[in-house]
Length: 430
Image (cartoon, rainbow, N blue to C red; front, side):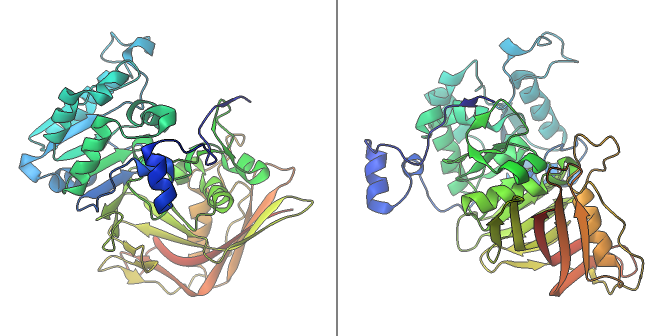
C-alpha cells in the first residue's frame, strides 16, 4: 500500500503565513486563508443527491436569492475530459465538464436564474488563479461542489501541498462571508471539513488498524489529511455516504485518533444545513429522506490491549428531516410537530452480525447500524443491544444503550422511531 506524500503538521515555518501561525497559534496552512465571520450558509449533502430532490435543490436556490439565484458549479473532484474514455458521448460521459453541465441544467430546471460551470479541474489547474474566473465567481450568489475525489479539490483549489487559497477559492470564501450559500454533495460536502479531513477507508480496517495521515491507493485504509479541506465547517469532522456505506465505525475511529469530539455523519440524499458557520450563531437543520448522525466523543474513552482497540461512552444522535441542532450547546431538538415515542413493543432487537455493512458480506444491509439503533429505541424489552462486525480477527462488538436522557421521535405518535437523541455507544474487540 503506497501513500502519496502529503504535508504533515510538523513543517518548517518559513512564510508570512507561517509567521502568523507562530504569533496566533493558527496552523500555517490555514493562516493564509481569509477567516472572515460567515454570514452565509452551507448545504452539505451526504452523496447520491437525486435530481428530483426539490427540497434540497430548492433550499440551495432559496438561500442563493430565489428567482435571482446565480449558481457557480464546481466539479474539479471529477476526472477531467482528458481521462474520460467516454468524453465524446453525452450519454455516458462522467468528467468534470459534462458533470458541470449536468448540475448547471438541474439548477436551472429547479428555478435558478442562472447556473454556470466554473472551468477548473486537473486539466485546467491554472484557472484557479485566473482573475477572469475569480470575477465569474464574484458574480455568483451560491456555489455547488460536485462529488468524486475530495483530494482533487485540494490539488486544484488549495495549491496542493502549499494548502493555500487560490484566487478562486479566496473569492468563494469571501462570498460566503458576505451571505452566499455553499453547497456540495459527497466529496463536495467532505471538502468543507477543516483539519483531519477523511480521505478514504472502510469501517472494519479502521477499527482494526487505526488511521494514518495520507491519501492511499488502498481505498479500504483509513486515511486523513491533517491540514484538512476548505475549513468552511469547523464544529466537527464530516463523513458522507455514512449509512449506505456503513461508515460509522471509521467515523468513530478517525475522531478518536485525531482528538476530535464531534462527527457529522451524513446520509445520502440528505442535507446538513448550517447557518452562520464558524460564528456564535451557528445553527444546524437537517433536510431530506434519511438523516444525519452526530457522534459526541467528549466523554469517550479508548483503550488498546492484546485484542485490539476499544471505545466506550461515545454518544449517538440521529437527526431527520426538520430536526435542529445547536453545536455550541450540543443540543438536538426534534422538528416541530414530531411526537416523542414511548416504546410499547416488547420484541427483542434482531441479531445483527454485520453492523457496518461489509463489502465482504453478500447478504449485507445498508443502514445496518441505524437499523439496530432504531430497533432498540422501539422496544420496551431491552435497554441495550449488541451487534457485531461481519469480519473476524478480531470481531468487533458494538453495544448501543439507551441513556436516562435518551428519547426517540417520529412524525406520528404510533409510528416507528425516526429521530434518536442521546444513545450511548461502545465498541470492543472479542
